[in-house]
Length: 501
Image 1 (tube, one colour):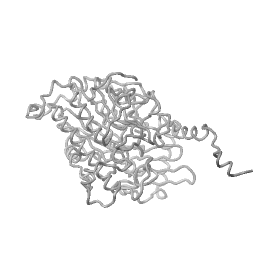
Image 2 (cartoon, one colour; image 1 turned 180 degrees about the horizontal axis):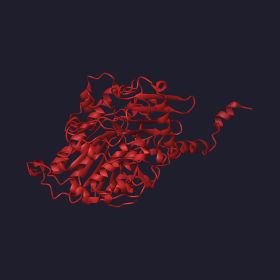
Image 3 (cartoon, rainbow, N blue to C red; image 1 turned 135 degrees about the horizontal axis):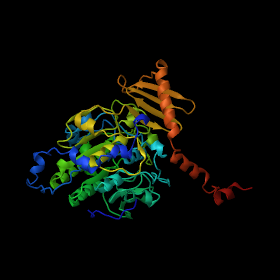
Image 4 (tube, rainbow, N blue to C red; image 1 turned 45 degrees about the horizontal axis):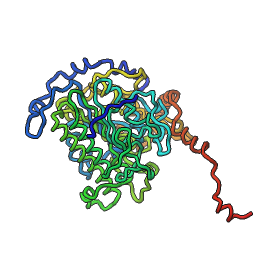
């Protein structure tokens, strides 16, 4: 869907529902849903330095923040030595989502967020869109910003896209965002704003050049969007940082905060997370100054677990130990174990979400129906959602409606969780089957497959069912194209001359 409006420069199959089923409430239902007073803080918005809020729409503003490859433990409130006071405050005053799941890599998670559907349904379940990739998130998928814009929202994105870059039809401006500022690919040099030596830095659909650390610039753009926002409409702001993804780089003043950390990678990684934290604080301050904080839902998550295996660091070559810490969870990014798929996450909305830990199961696909329901959004195309509306559980303390987690299913491996039982099935030969009880073994240290053959059979049947529904992975098709449909490679003339007859 093309759009020319700009901001100033400044579940399981049995539970699957259609967009119409999930989002049928409409704007009127959203009004009645939040008829309760917002509290005194909104009424006293005229305090020094704070703008008086204009008459605001009943729909909440939504600020959705995504960190890139941040380890589960790498926030202060999970016990890290990395200082994240702004993130910690929002988490402590909101709902800490302690059993929140994402896909094991960047692109699939962002696809799941934007569609409310598992990436296996449209071929995005394997790997990420590589720099040489010509494909992107299918254009017949209706995305979250399109749904919210149709419900009356202004939509803005600042940061990393990574859902297709080879054609402008895949870009944010053409997928529902009124404005876009940032990078389209998965990994850029944080200061040069380039990938493989090619610049990747845009405002809307036009390339731009400017100096600065990318994550600081992303935060500054988010603040500009908030300052310029016309409060006659609600705002959806998607702030997608590229930190702490490789390359491990940070401004000197942030590196200097962690002189006590001797490992260079860990020091830079910690500094990058501090940049995120400072920018989160700036965004909250801008919302308060605008007088709209009380009517704003803030969501924070990482797109996958932290990187602990060099196979998944990205394009940059990393020397030394990888710095991420996923706490008690096994492995990390790129794997179907908890360390790769359980994300640090929280939701904060003053007066609407009570402080505390939310321990119900939740998956990133649940965000679309939850946010759309809050917005009173009408459905787009009538494709079935895998996500569920989690708002009653989060806001009223009701049990999570989700009992199943689909970690991923592709032609080689699949993993699902039902209740406390999790099966990881590597079906490619030699086959490997692992069964864990996460209530008793959150670190996935003990394989119970041999002792529970009936449970293995049950969960294998579910993976097989999902496999019959999946589309062929686009990355594998792209790899075949790059391998078999590229020009013949021959020795150089100099080499052939040197070889003689």
